[in-house]
Image (cartoon, rainbow, N blue to C red):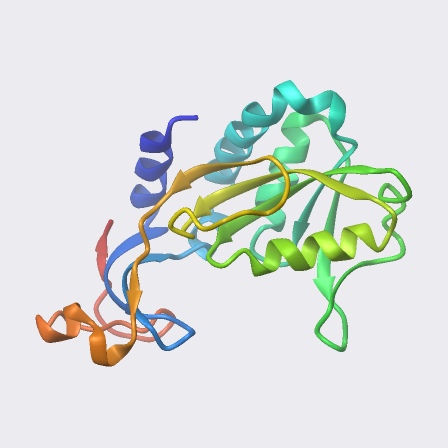
Length: 199
């Protein structure tokens, strides 16, 4: 996998931004991944899905189905499945907030071997939740593919995994933020205001 090519693609599509951001957690950081920009670009999704499929093509005989959690990773997982020639299903949260597979997804059952595709990993929590939901159907996650890994080397999903791009994503509490001390303008993703610089 060519991480430089992936970074270039994400930067050119304004999906990978650099600046001073307030994350959902309230912490501040200098890199933000605007994943919705990818979903709006079918050609980009197709190319990235092809790259992810190529990363797992050697394991294809050990994969029965590709699965992604809703909603951001769905288009990426679907593209990966198409390039691998495998069925695709997705997970979504139920009324109680638990990740689940709809009963109509009959391609995942007892003994199914699943390639889990995630768009971005920050803590690995979504991967763990997805794995539990898949295992509840008697299937197993045998591989995990991630578009952007921003765990700073802390990710351990419990199975072989690959990321198309790993980015340093140090973050700070507002009181400890060096960007605040330097007077760098703060952006809250999704809010109005000047667009931050590309990464």
